[in-house]
Image (cartoon, rainbow, N blue to C red; front, side):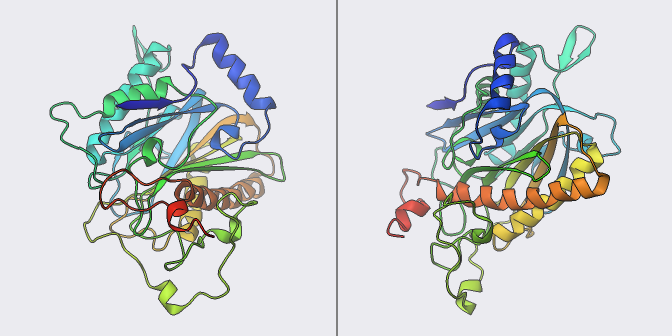
Length: 357
């Protein structure tokens, strides 16, 4: 069974109304707090996998940084600053390992139906870069025959894009795991002192852990806002045993944290590249270990361009600091909100394991 979360297609008056709403609403601590984008999610219960689509109201400037040793991506070469294409229509995060790369085709079809993409004669070609994670060993039924579900999931996720979204066992994080706990989809947002909004979206499928040792405390605790992932802070002490890495098996290329940072600032591709690189600091602060040969850790950065960036490198530095912190928070939220999959031997959710804390 395929389920979809979102609010309809991105067309005409409905799109304009949503943009207006996004500019006036209160912050929800989600990536959709950033004006100019919406999120769509779809998953397949039986296969225990899913797709998340970040759909921009208008083409956005974007770039990418990959620091893990085993990434899986589609159409990301064009995001390098020296390449010709300078804007994208959507960014896709997906489960399914290499099978999941089909999801971008479904997303493109949905966008063409909405009149999106650059015109080539009578045809339109939407630009949809994508990253995938490995969730093939999580207990779901992957015996899908000739037609893996990802094209349809990509189509449905894109069509459903709206301002609301689910966290935890949802979208691209539906089948995600970490070494000790169920992984999941996380998001967080922040307003900088200069008035820019940044949001992070991440599917946490790490080879390591987001919690300290075998306890409930998150590595990202110093960056927590309120009690968004339990409010426990750091433990009184961190022992040598706590620092011992916990690893999810030894199979190469079986783990990936894939994420996107978005902002309403006007940025160039080179500036988005710097933002994506800086956001990896947040990934390393929230997950131990990170950026290993067995991870495909990849971060996109996108700018919707609603506000000009002032003060040059100083203004960009403020954004990079915020990007690192907000991604660390989103990673912890993704695991904190995740529910276990209904299969024998499934990883426990944080709330199931640590409900007394």
